[in-house]
Length: 289
Image (cartoon, rainbow, N blue to C red; front, top):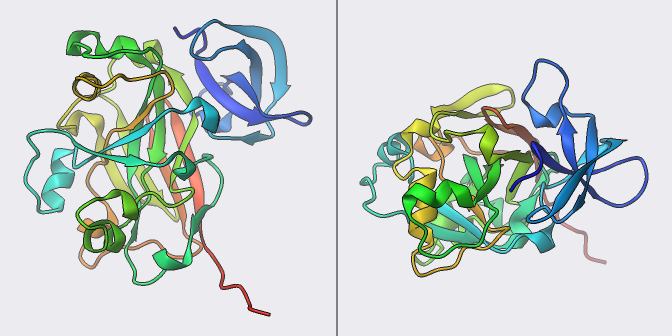
């Protein structure tokens, strides 16, 4: 585990969605730039074969099919500088919430904003390292935690602060769980290609302008600590996703706040993995006949 380098799920010119090992152009590590891939056959969490068959990548999809994802766990306030900009204490334990699988989306598809999330303002971006579990485990020691990680992606924990903080009854998921509010990808880089997930640059561009520029070194709870903690008394399964928190620079932490608007283009990126670029699309009011 794993037998690939950079796992993608994609559409080619013909046929259904396929898994492949991305072939990167020279001079880049950004999976979103891949135009070809070697077809993968078998179980991406078990026995697989990276074949010699090469297919053209016409469209990138979320790197795991929805039926291959078991649980989407997320951490809040897991970067020290983000906790400080939020004027909240540094947590003593990981702050855990969940997103539904229907929140997952492609690294290139639009982010749909339903009518309830359009008013009042409060729509925010959060670039995050996403750890993908590849091996079942319970009560995993921190020293062995990364052995259970299949690989890493980057994701956007799209959030609406009013629904998250004021209308959520003390729970965050309502303001973070709308359909399509967890685009991730552009692929999954094998764990062995990123031996230290705590030394990666991570950031966000909004309409081409840098709004988040941080390092995973600022995490309060490292990937290994997080995997170990979340497995205590709870079995982690292959296909579980863990969004590991966001660095400083979110719209809520600015004066005045910087909220996303209809038509904005959000690009989240992670060193060694690549970027997801998604346009914000407000749902239009349908005429009643």
